[in-house]
Image (cartoon, rainbow, N blue to C red; front, top):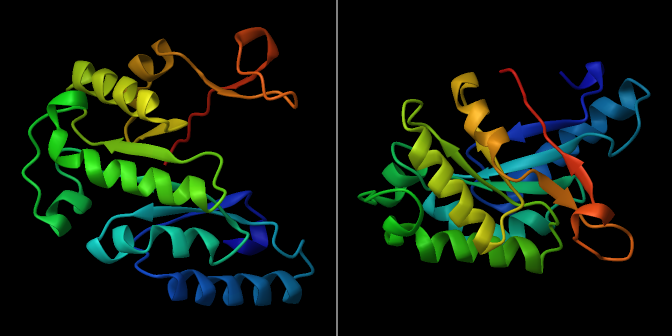
Length: 185
C-alpha cells in the first residue's frame, strides 16, 4: 500500500501509543526502502476500544503522522460493543455517548489534532438520525463526520460543509477554505 504513496491511511483497532509507534517504524522503513517522502503518509486513527478511549491523548502524540482521529460511538459500532453501551439514539438522545465523545475530542485537541472526526454512522437507512448526529457532533467541536455507505452522502452534503479557518483564524464563510470529501471504499 505505501509504495503507491497514499496521502493517508485509516488505522483501525489502535489501543495504545505503542501500536502507532510500531506502525511508524514500519512505514518509515518502507518509505526509506522505496525512496518515498519520509513521514509523507498521514494516519487517521480510529478510537474503537476501551483501551483506545483511555489513551487518546498518548495515541495522538505517538507520531507526527497522526493528523486525525475518528471517534465512533453510534448504533451498531464496535466501540459500543467494546464499551457495552446501550445506544439510545443519535445526537442529544444518545447521552450515554456524550462523555466519551467529549473526552476523545478534548484529548485530540490537547494533542494538537486540528481535524477530529465523528462517526461512522452505520444505519444506512436512517438519514434523519445521521443528520441529527452530525449536527450534534459539529456543535461539540468535531470537524467532520465519517460515513460508510454511498447512500449516506446526500444528507451529508446537505449539511454545512467542513471549513478550514484562514491564516487569520477567521471561520466566516468568506474567509474559509471549504472541503467536501467523498471516499469510495
